[in-house]
Image (cartoon, rainbow, N blue to C red; front, side):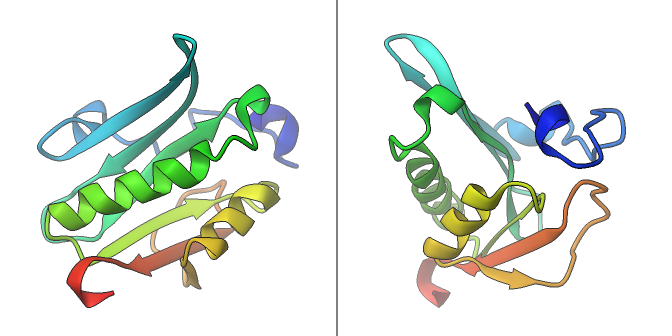
Length: 133
């Protein structure tokens, strides 16, 4: 899907991939949403020591869009990050993903300067969470 939506195409080898260990406890986690037993969405959370929590690889299948799964992923990941004592949650996204950008803004994320070198990112967002929010 990203190959079709991104104006430059998408080559996973060029993307900054989180290492698999970074998305497993205690350094992170990976959630999968299912409808009738079938996977229809996913989202990862990185919890690097001494750094903001970061959402990675959030995706909802086209057939499941509009069901509120993206909003539920964001709420769950925010709660989990705050539970780990994090005060900032951040993410990056591509300019072609208009619905995602709108979702992030509607959930309280603010656009910030780039915080990584992800070649497919055009927008970077942060949100204050937990007791500091």
